[in-house]
Length: 323
Image (cartoon, rainbow, N blue to C red; front, side, top):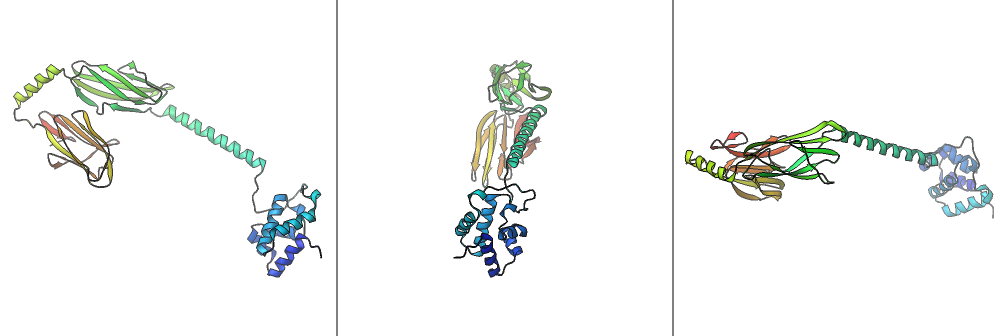
């Protein structure tokens, strides 16, 4: 039996198939001089043993030869002492990219640098942007109460200083705080301030007005109002509906939360307000509100979409317009 080299077998098969070295090179995504080196058994011109075996295997598959037999022929031809590659000053250029320790080191360095940049940017933003302050109580900037104390609740960012009317207020590790403030009869102006510890120039301020009327005084005022205007407007009836899909809503009546959450199509609920009401929604196009059977248009207030009605000077005002 004649002994053929790997290069001879591959070359004869290529010629029998009527293919040129350029045709094979294009199909294997390498340069034609790589194919020439394989067919000439010039394996030292290829800088990687794994690349040689991969090329032989793929070349054999392309020509319909048995890859396992071709690799076995290659190992017999090279012998154990020639498997280890020698240094080549100018290796054959190959189309396949190979991962090297230098690539790993550069990739690791880039990842570390990217992580450091992200950390520095986030730290910078934490210092330069205004700190957040979200109040869960009260929901509005003006509140009426008959209680001598009012509980203010909310959430702030960590690493900030929270004060209410100049008094520092503590919060838990998640930023939740609760503070009960004593009230004087009449209007009480409350200023809530959040300042960054490392940048005092960045502060968020929220101002509230809490109107405290003692219960006996409130009753007297009510009697006086009834005496002065026995035919006053009285309470209003309003309905909130979701016409299609789903929508998040919140309903507050006379400073008491009556409903909140995501509502499905067909939701409809009636409410009665004596002094004030407001409705918030995330989808005004499918959330409809009627007051005394009159449709009310939504109002954009910053990032809030709402309808707000209050009894003022013996008449109802909804979103700044008389009802």
